[in-house]
Length: 369
Image (tube, rainbow, N blue to C red; front, top):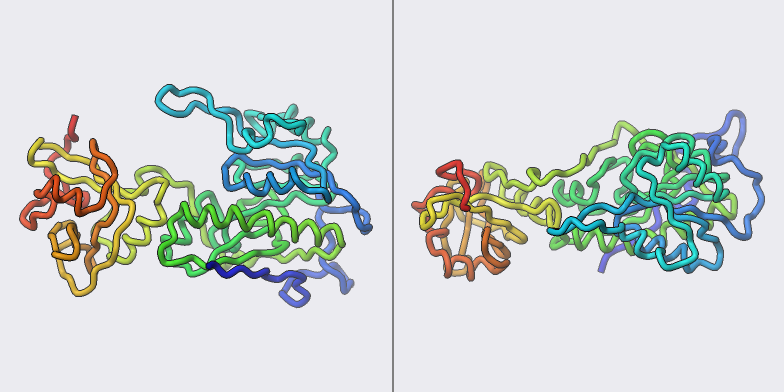
């Protein structure tokens, strides 16, 4: 079970800024100025693309307290072997409803901005959209433009916060609801919801849990806005860390790192970009990619980095700079996904200590055709 708690729910004494000469919270920025009266029903525009935003959008769809008046998502994109156009998970959720969906190629375009303004939103909610929003969009909301970010800001600003938190060995992460500005995840914080990162968490499992937490965080944030008691807490920029967008090459394992670091990266990069290495296949005289979905640190084993050996309790153990790593769940190029034990039974050369080529030290430069 994960631990969930609200951080700085009302934040009376958490270093937030004050307005000049006043005892109240800092005055809202231009996009958040509104009459301080309780709102019975807020008009909401949702902007998002990734599936992590689906539970939040569903909550807004079903809400009796607020009205979902529009959805902005990315254009359909080619996917699969046949490269057919595929709609985003956000579009799929609402495409057969009365909620209007708009898919601008550039949200900075005059047409996109006009569409958003035409919805007259009180609140704009953004989650995993994939484009930077201009000030004209941020200012289109009468009350606030809120972003739901999958980390405890200012830690892990950027595109891949879930993977970064696991790879770094963080023990907690969460959802931050922040007031958007034009910076990269630099806006003032409204609230944070926290959850533990479990030892077996992958990016996939943590992504799913954060997706479930997000609607609760947004519900609380909107309630505070509705009651005129929502805080604005400036981020401590000196504590900021960054999680840049991941490419497939980030998944290549460096066996000159410590075993515990590699094990965390395997979980962090599952399912994307996927951890992998290369092995030399002597039967075909070529390199083959080996995807690694799970591994386990092995104590008291000393093997040269990139060297593979077999143990009675572990079919395939690889040396690292510090410690060793047993492979658990793998897939060799051209084969199905299987346990390491199954893999070694079919390819015994993989676990021969004298056989080089594991772990990014291939003999040749050419792959198997």
